[in-house]
Length: 139
Image 1 (cartoon, rainbow, N blue to C red):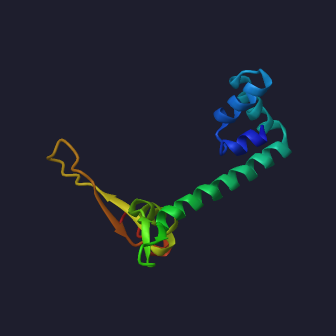
Image 2 (cartoon, rainbow, N blue to C red; image 1 turned 135 degrees about the vertical axis):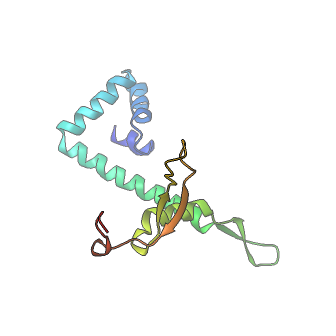
Image 3 (cartoon, rainbow, N blue to C red; image 1 turned 45 degrees about the vertical axis):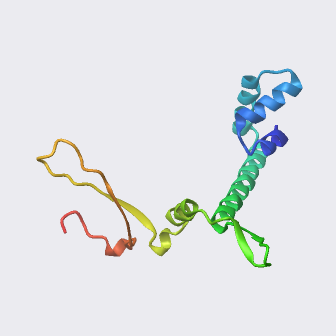
């Protein structure tokens, strides 16, 4: 099952289907066994946790490929983008990993009591506040 989990990037149903096809069992039975082993077998659980870390590393490497873009040598010898850096990936990374450098998102809502519906949110990037900078609700 661990090998199948590795090949399926940790997706239990895909791994269980592969194992079931080889063993003649059902996908559901193999999946149930997987979850039981996670609960009862510490070595199995540790192997799956290592696999999850490896999968995360792999996916992060793909994110960085999107962030960096892909350059190839052009006709004149200069390096040109075969695939340009992906702006959405850059924004995603900054929102999730750039928090300590003040890349956070805050949504503001217009709560005018005379309106029956909320206005569309305005999305803005604002600096993160340190705990000692945050005021109380009374400020």
